[in-house]
Length: 148
Image (cartoon, one colour):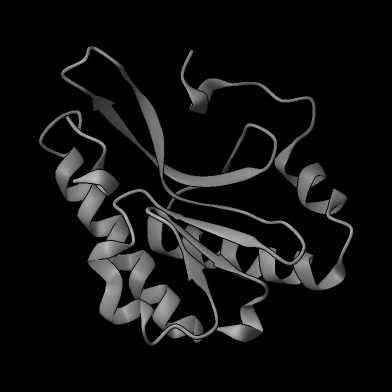
């Protein structure tokens, strides 16, 4: 079963409502609206709290295959994680203009949306979505994008 097909004990709406901080709920609503606008897709709740938009298929030379979200984030108090499945390296210039954040190979961490320039975040997300979608049109992606 792919991650996109996993079933949950709660709905996405119940999950968002369970967030115990009003500012986090507000930031979550803004990010959800932004990702829905960019992807044109409805959100999917993955695992315990990742909210994803769009799905692409991958199939590695190792034989591992599956599906992943094209855009996604995990809202947590004081540490919202925004996933760039094609990695943060390709967005270094834009990230330098984003505002207060930290990164790893494919994650941007922010405490709250007020700490960043949301128009820069939108540009990063749009470019990432377009890049992954373009690659996926040729068939399953054959490598971990953020490592290539």
